[in-house]
Amino acid sequence: MSEQKEPVFVEETIDLREYVRVLAKWKKLIALGTLLAVLTSAVLSFFVLPPVYEAKILLLVTQAATQQRVTSQGQGLEEVVGALSRLPQMTMNTYLGQVKSETLMQRVINNLGLDPALYTPVSLASQIQASVQKDANLIEVKVRNGDPRLAARIANTLAQEYLKLISEKNQEQMARSVDFLQKQKEAAAKDLEKAIVALKKFEEQPRGVAVLEEEFKGKTAELSAYRAQLNAAEVQMRQLAAGVDRLESELVGIPATVQVEKADPETGRTYTLQDTNPVYVSVSEQLNQKRAALAEKEAETAALHELVDRLEIEAEQIRGELVGKKAKFEALQDEVTRLKETTSLLAQKTTETQIARSMDLGQTSVVVVSEAGIPSAPVKPNKKLNIAVAFVLGLMVFTGLAFILEHLDNTFKSADDVARQLGLPVLGVIPDGRRDRRSAYGA
Image (cartoon, rainbow, N blue to C red; front, side, top):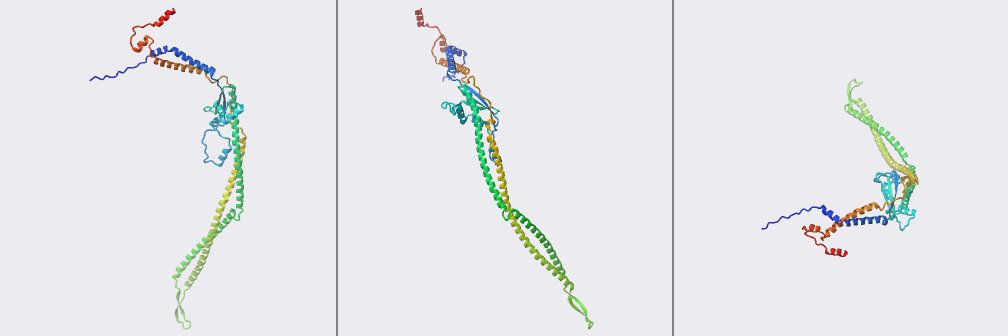
């Protein structure tokens, strides 16, 4: 069996001298290519690309609201109406979003009389950059145009029209709020008038709340008096009943008759007789009187019970009628009070909204910190930067191209190429006879 040979790994090394040789070999190509790229960039920057000028304005927002979540849950009437009567609260992003609005762009075009064929709201907006400066209520607006004077005019006109636009939008919104509040105030006034009429009609009823209250008060007093009489009668009745029971128990122990001895006046003889017991008669008379008084008191108590029961029913009927009418009266009164407060609030907020409508929000919420001046130098093209970039790119591209050409070139041009590619020593060099003959003819 033949022995299996292990694979031999050849470690590749980077020869920097080889790279230097390639660069030296193709140095003319690299230099010419890089020079061509630099010249091309210079020609484009100086003669082909149109210059672009930039004008800047700075706007200060003095009434920017903090970003917050708005909800209508839990809001009362005063909060809702107050929101309508206040000036619109806008955040910095809201102010920023209006800078490049189509309406504002069209107003700038119309104000400056720009050619509609060249300038549309979209094309003009593409020339404008707006941004909010960090941690400040400042909006920086940049306008770029090939004409430095036109760039400055567009920037300054945009600032003027921006302030006017905010004021107009505010006045439109406040006008709508005024109309809405006035309509609501008129509706509330009509409802208040109806509620007052209903309350007066209710008060003019024959048995109104005041009459029922007096009647209930009198009936309650009468009921209390008769209840006191009933209580006293029941006490007396219990006392009489107790007296009757006592006399009845006493009468049980007293005999109705007693034996009496009498003497006959004619004969002088004595004899015994059964005669009525005077004590029994006295107790019986007392018992009869007590029973009569008890029966009279029982009749009186029963009459008082009937009277008290009837008075309780009448008082309860009056109380029920009073409670119902009083609840309705209070409801009507509360409705009148509520409508009065609503009408007063709407009148107040309508006045406040009319005042807010007359305010110039554009002048009070946004201030032009710095107007745009005519730029003296273009911001595009950046000639030095373009040339530097062209130099670096040209150098990289043509250096790479040199290594590619070197890799594709498989011809021998010198003895060094033979020794490097084949790894064999060079024994001799055959002179180029054609070159020698050309030299001879030339001589």
